[in-house]
Image 1: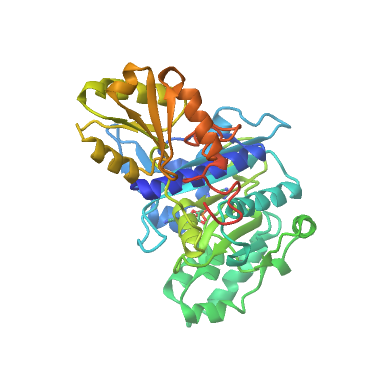
Image 2: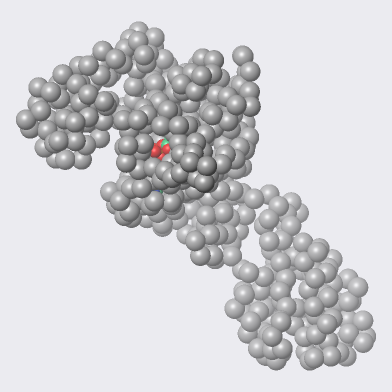
Length: 445
Ligand code: HAM
């Protein structure tokens, strides 16, 4: 990730941090690798991720370890191990970091990719599902992806009461059509028949279109839960599509699943997705603990932003350049630069014995708004010159007052406002690369 991309990347992460903490989420960091069993158990042996995409290796003590292919399994493992969800309590956790899947790389699909995810443990109510779906949608809105370039799909996968019979009916359907379906669909009929809904083979797609749908097979409590999730979403005005064929690629889901898709990502149109996993904590030997969450892909988010022409302005590398007129004042320029930086101003000075002219050129390249000119005569008189690079106006200021005077000049030219320090490092989200629009909604990031 080279600086241009990395800056946009940091912006996306800051938006998530600010937004997720507004919804009550706290950060959690889990290891990049864990015992393989954490993933096989949670994600499911019959999933693509576990059966063919994990980076699994043995360490020097012959333990089987795996680079994490996703974050949920680790978060739930950690929550159980450290008792983060005592009886009756709940935990709201979010994470960001690289995940690893041995997939066939293409646009928007990497073997190392970055996810930002949120997990809510301990909440069984459908309002939690609605909140989770909203949070994911709000995130994409906040980074500037326009609503009309995204689709929100929702479905219910049922639970242990209604899904087994449904799976059997899909299995029976697949076996009935085994002669026409691809080998993979037929092979999975025993272990994971529902995955046939995800098969991209055009013949399979047409056949599976006729397969029984989970919505018609939900038990009463699952149907009621799903109805409430949809009603709450309706009441917030969020538009979604029910997709009874949305099954998602992980085994831990129960009841609600959802996905946000966006344009401009090639074959990979899922930018984020998630769902409920009320049995996962028990899979790890813990007490029954409902849970749900989502993860979004950072690379795919950036692709969606790019496709929607969300401008990612380049950020000036310095607001102020401190130029030395000659060698006698280089040390002073160095010290003034440090004084400005300590005072919160993004400042830069020369380290390459450049001439004054070359220093001004460099200030231009860095897009500095002001140049502080340090000259021997002015300095002897206890003064400095500040040049406004846009208006070319020069102001004499007292050496002792350089910091407050520059701050005043920057405030006048709106490089500073009362709430923030220069450089946009204090309150994050309000300052995208190059001073972003407050929540990205108007597109200029
Ligand atoms: P997932 O759908 O497998 O869900 O991944 C979530 C997001 O990660 C995808 O929507 C996509 O943006 C991104 N992603 C996945 N694979 C790749 C890849 N190879 N290259 C680039 N981006 C990728 C999960 O991982 C679940 N843990 C989500 C969840 C959290 N469910 C409940 N809680």
